Each structure stands twice: as structure tokens, then as C-alpha cells.
Image 1: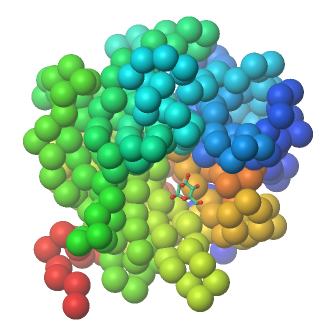
Image 2: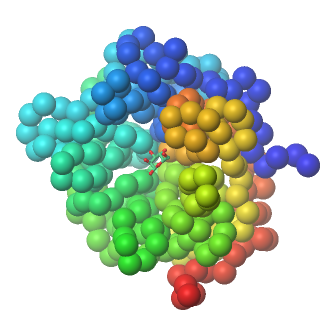
Length: 316
Ligand code: BMA
């Protein structure tokens, strides 16, 4: 059977050997298209175990060339220095109103929170604000305002309820509210342990397509896979459907073995004019990979093989 995500035959597309400064991993990259180029902002561990974000560019979305210097590193002064002290991770890119919003995890002795930066040209970056308190990760901002508000999905940590996807709205990108839980892990499914936003949602005529990650705990540790959910176009708080089956799981050797075993983790996907989407993922927290899927097939998985809405089902 044809896989739903067709892996690029020359994966991995980027490794530490492609980076002209010392790093030990290349993974979890946000990707966007700009001026006929693909821009990738990837995470790398340094040899001290802390992460920075580098940039690579490509004409075709498959062959990337890395910039000589890191793109985003923890700053040394001010409020951002205080909360970026331990590193910056897992950047998502949203193109909106002629600029690019960058949301990434900032780690410090105070926990992990989400920073928002902006760029217009991928040369200069303006740090805007921290848009969450601790402990929050995986913020993806929708590429359009909906009914006048910016919209985001995120994933708070919680020991009471299993990690779930939430939605929030903002008039100005700084102040966020009207928060609601929209999606919960499904018990004894591939994403039983936790779920989190992956790539910024993609507009389709049937709804917003969200590619997310789900985690299952095994005797050999956690397995990270990717799945899809569809949100209502005008009210993304409403989930139209969540595909019952995953779309991608660790299978290639560099997804099964690496810095963290058995991980495929996405922070970015690029919708193409021909109805396909390039999905980018980190393999085993070590390398970057890409694959292609047909957007309508992902949408149909959400519509035709949807699971029940776990928000209303009590776990026993
Ligand atoms: C998550 C995040 C990701 C990482 C994944 C697997 O909690 O830290 O950045 O890819 O674990 O290690």
C-alpha cells in the first residue's frame, strides 16, 4: 500500500555534517517559502547540550544550504537573556501580514516558555515578547487572523490532565486569552501519552489542517509519531475530525536510532500549489527529513476515519 507520507528518497536532507559551526544535531525545523526559496530554521544541540537555531535555504525544498553563522542564539542581556539562558528550541514560522512570526521554546532556570520574535528578511530578528508563562511548549500561530484575532494552538504541561492541545486568541500577538482545550490524547492509542501542535495549520476548503505529534509510552521508551486533525475554518475551536491513524512513524534507521530513539517530530510543513504538502521532520532528534503527502488525502483521513472527541470522554 502506498504510504500516506512519501519519504524523500535521499533522506536525511540535513545533518550536523552540513553545518559549518560545531553542533551535534540538526532537527525540529520550522520551514516556510519566501521569494521562491524555502527557508528552514533548524534546532541544533551544541556540545554543552544546549540548543540554538540555525538557518538553511533551498530552491527546491529538498537540497538545503546552511548559513555560515547561527540564526538565533540566547541573548546576553535583558528579559530575554533571563528566560533564554538554557537555549532556544523547536522554532515554528508563520507568514502573516508581510512578516514572519517565529515562536520557539525558551529554556531557563525558570522552566520552558514561549518566545515570539519577528523577521521580515531572515537577516535581522526582533524579539517581541514572551507569550506564555512556564510551562508551555509547541506554539503554532495560524497564518490568518480569524474574526479579527490572531489564533494559536499550544500545549501546556499538566499532571492532572494528560498533555492536550489548547487554543488561544489575541488582538495584538502579545496578550492571549479566551483559552480552551480543543484536543486530548486518546487512551491506548498511538498518541495516548501526550499530543502537541506540530506545523502551523494549513488552510484547505474543508478546514484548517493541523499536523500534530503524538506520543506512546512503550517498555522501551516513548515513540513519537505524526497525525492530522481538521479545525473549522471560521471557528477553529471546533474540531471537525481527528484521523484515527497516524500518518508517519519512525521507520528509517535515522528515525529509529539517534540522540533520542524513535522520534519523528514536525515543526513545519509547506503547502504547494499542486495540492501536495512537504512535511519536514526531525529524525531521532538528530537529522532533518522531508516527505510529501496529498493534502486532500490528509483531509479525508480526518473526515472519513475520525475518532470520537476525547474532550468529552472521561479516562478511567
Ligand atoms: C519533546 C521535545 C522535542 C523532542 C521530543 C523527542 O518533548 O523536547 O523537541 O523532539 O521531545 O525527544
